[in-house]
Image (cartoon, rainbow, N blue to C red; front, top):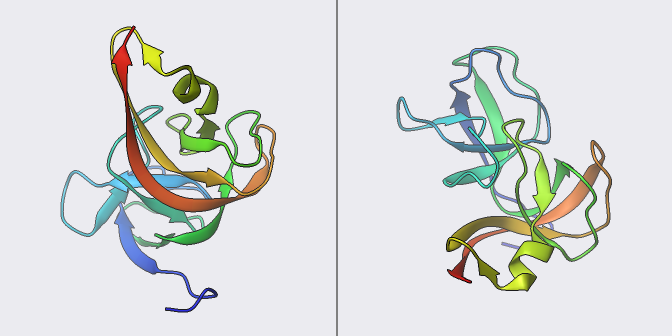
Length: 140
C-alpha cells in the first residue's frame, strides 16, 4: 500500500437517526458488519471515521479505517494531540493533558483513535492520523 491509499470499508449503520459525515463510529451491537455512533466519550471498539452522512438506519456508510482522515473536533485541539471520542456525537477530543498528567483516580484507560495533524476548535473539520491504541493510566 502506498502513502496515498487509505483503507475504506462499508458498514451498516444501526442508529435510528443515521450518522453524520466525518464522525467516529464504533462496532455495532446487532450483527457483524454493523456500526453505530458511540454511546459516550472515550468509547471503546473504534472502527473509523465516516466519509459521508447516512440518515437512514440499516443502510451502508463508508468508513475510513486508516491513514489521514477528516474528523469533527469536540473542543480545542492542538497539532500533535492524542485524540479520543469526545461525545456521543462521534466528534474527537484532545486527551493530551489528561494522558500527560499520567495519573488518574481511579485508574483510567483512554481509547486513543489517533493524533491531530493540525489544530482545531469545536465543530471544525480537521485532519487526524488514525492510529487506534489504548493508554492505561495508574491510579494516583
